[in-house]
Length: 409
Picture 1 (cartoon, one colour):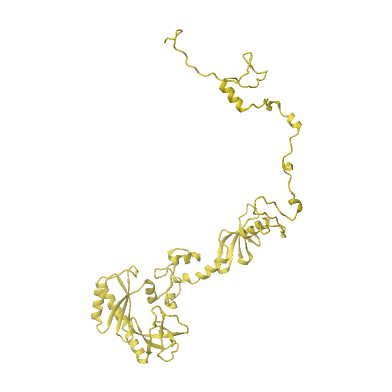
Picture 2 (cartoon, rainbow, N blue to C red):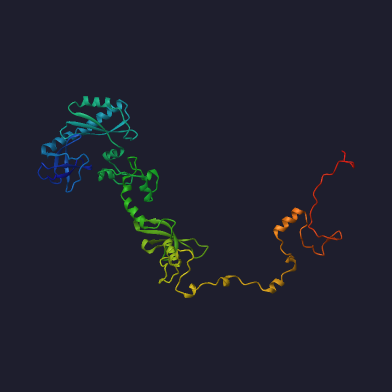
């Protein structure tokens, strides 16, 4: 049998829970029913009918007991009037015990069988544990006709229950007006939307990041994917420029155009996304069009570009037959220098070089002590009236002999 699932809410602006109404006649939106919850029997309002429900994590839905009668609604109203007095008594007792807690509210079940006190710690940390055994025991003695429970809530739930004006100026906070669940908020959402990271700008009355940061986050992310980033080069209808700022909600960017005169300042102008073209893509296309063809390696290229084969030693192929003719290696050598240029060289740069001697013969002459064949020096250069037929060598330093003529010291 297919379950008949309905969404039921227990407060005016609260989370919607799913219950199975298979054993109850067809319900209508706006009717009140009695269901069993973790906090006892409660009266809830039917909000919607779930056509294709997803299975709950525990594997089963809790059933709807019955429709709420007029007597049940009147009984709930009577017990609701006593909630404020119970909260005041609990706050006074917590102050006497000097407990670092804030009693936010008190809630009776519709039949008065259970009383729940909502509290929060002073530093708004939900994970912090506070010993409230003495406070709960005193409240149980004071309200002996009902079962007393203490429930800790977070700072967002506190702001939702207390209500009041929002940090943005709205008369009613979003959490108290229409938010049924709290979504996780991160600082990345504020950065993506270009919002100032000043704590007063992004923090709500609860001391946490504002819930409204997630409202337009997905739209900003989707718009920025289609817009150029800052400091990117683009081609606008008025020329090439650099992106200065991005406006995702208008699908426009602010472009800095170069000034016509060097003395003037650059011009800033806003353009729509459809009027801009990315400079880097156009530059890549230009380079690709100027590059040789890389798809026709085996010949028969009909695109008008040259093709370089991946095999070593391959020649350039093109539609021009003159480019494919073999090149004469002799013609590639540079022409010899004319004889006149050699004769016109300055005499100071000419060197008289004799026949090149075999290096093996030089080594033999050095071993035997024979002088090497060297060219005679120029006749104009003489030292001491004698021609210098050997290179200018410094005589080795020899230590004077201290011995006498007879060879004795």
